[in-house]
Amino acid sequence: MAAADEINEGNLSPETVMARFVAERGDIFEEFHFMAREMPETVNLVRRTAGYVHYYENQTTADQELSGPMRELIALCQLCAQGDDRFAANHVRRLYRMGVTNRAMFEAAASIAPVVGWSTISHVAQAILTANKPEYPYGVLPPGGEPATLTPFPELSIGRGRNQTSGESLLDTPEWKYIAEIDPELARRAAGFVDHCLLPGGAADELLGPGPRELVAIAALCVRGQVDLAAQHIRRAYAYGMNRRQVLEAISCVLPMTGAVTVQIGARAMQQADQAAGAAA
Picture 1: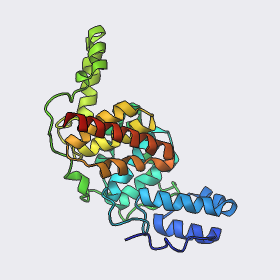
Picture 2: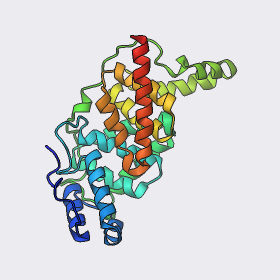
Picture 3: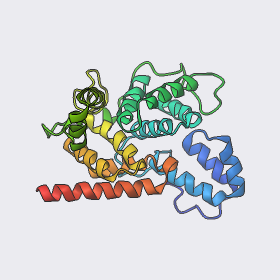
């Protein structure tokens, strides 16, 4: 079903734009009210695009495949990677309201860490701590505070196939083979961390399988403009059972905070992955 207000979007007043934004998202930052007074059409387009990629009420469509919690996990990780701690805590509260536990957030953070560094995991921890402070003003905690048990969402049970048996470890890449010739201990330790974060069985108590973990990493690689590396990880995501729509939706989750160019870079990486698959067929 298309967004309910799709045909009723022309010349909206600032008040109407913000009323819809708040109703669909559940909350909003104070600066958006100021922005809407000056540029309501721009903020309305932000609302509609962000609402679609982040799964706001009345802005979703029936053919979208990634769940709201998975989209929020990707967004949270990217916000933390950028140091947007104020925004990130709000997303933690949204995840809490969806029934997502701290453990799942940390697993997503570990998935982005090989791309942007493990300091991002500490930013996720800070966002969680901030979200649990009563004085944090943005968004609401669910009754009882953070959820004690995880509410299931589809990505907890998909992307766990293992259709490839080699070429998965960081040490299998040409660059890290070269590094291993110079400093084998560096290569061994770095690969130990990266493989733990992303590979099947890397984390013994994982909630997210390797496919969803790759979605987090792919989005981050596209933010950094790494088309070739993103294409490699896209091929791995496909091997774990993820599909093109899911990969594209994952990349689109970081559009609000990184721009449409990120999605364009992601499309290039996806095309490269498709070409490689066609050549191998």
